Image (cartoon, rainbow, N blue to C red; front, side, top):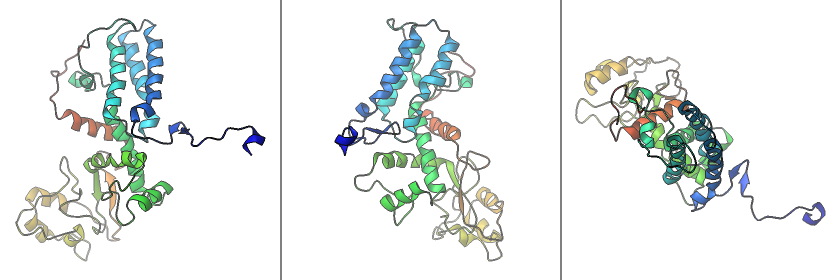
Length: 306
């Protein structure tokens, strides 16, 4: 058949729809083409005389958007993300390809908001997790979709996404999506319906920030399991019971949660958004704030690097 059609026979296709079909141990080599594309872009720009505003736009709109397709499916290594950011940093601080200049601030400092003295450049590792969290959210919110059913059959046939592990020889796409689970735990919250699927002490279900889990008021009451045990048959909260178990501030918040008489199933919502719909923007901000919390803001209020 190959001879008649004049086509070549290959063992495997390196790419499918622009993405590598296999990601082995050498992840840097697999995604080297991203570096090559970015390098070509930067070399072309450095031959031109650009202002700071021009560089800002090129980095933000073009350079940092190049790997968006790949990072929506795969988790790039931290070193690889640092290399891409370093390439952008050299372009930002230097005026030509052959001249090197001092980097007056680290890239992580430039990722701070402008109110904090940064330039709001993108932290690629944090954005990578936010994009992967979007894929994970689709698996959670659309359990009947093809990809969700495949992942469930392969990795958590008797459990849920929240209890799944890597299993034996996991695909790199599943390994990448699972890496975003911690971020989803930070930003997701259960909207109470019948309370049957929500655990009182380990689930996020209190509509407040920053903590969405309640605290017990009395010892010996932790034998309670699910939120449905706090709801009376008439679909109202057991007020006296709740005030005796939780601290006053938590009790007030719980009692303010509306209950529907139709007793719908509990639903997972994205807490940072008012409408509860997941967005990459708020997921990125949440991950970036967690990353930057480890180190204080290097700039003073309303400071500037210029």
